[in-house]
Length: 232
Image (cartoon, rainbow, N blue to C red):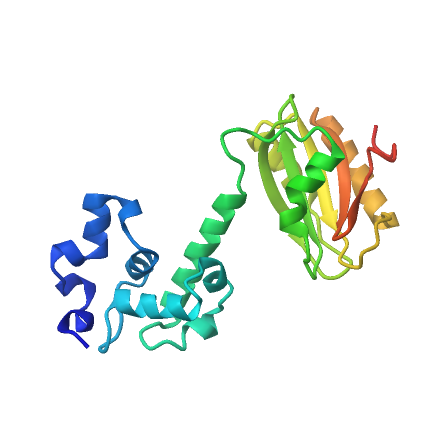
């Protein structure tokens, strides 16, 4: 193994340091391994941070998607990767995932139940637990924000109506869409679903905020309260 591989990043020549390379050549000039090396800062006595990251990536078939599925214990098996470094890698990859899913400057127009289903399906598909989301829209049904309101078990998710309305006021939303999934695959709303929907509709009306719809998701389809004339 070359002497270069045994040096920590700060001991390399400036041309070889990932941080300096990013500063002088831009982030696109760095390889995936170099970007990961910036996150962990140092490797081990046997190999540099970049060499270590190259090895980790090779074990993940050089796929960031595969790497993003590794947990803290799996990453910590590599000498030079402790719990803190493993968490830093996981956090960075999660940010990348959220950026990919976040709305772009070209705001999504969500003016039908099918559009809402197609938009949220990648987030809710195959979940083993229930999640409750709210989409916040302007007057033209363009997406302003999306928020995970609650996460629960197989058949129950705690939902705080105050949180939904506080977020709506913060982004100046004119309308909201309620969404939750049924991991059981049942499309029909429960009595609790109907009561919660009515409660949110009534509370939103006081704030002059319209509830456009409430969708129940499964992996194979959806149920729309508006399409079924439960919400007018």
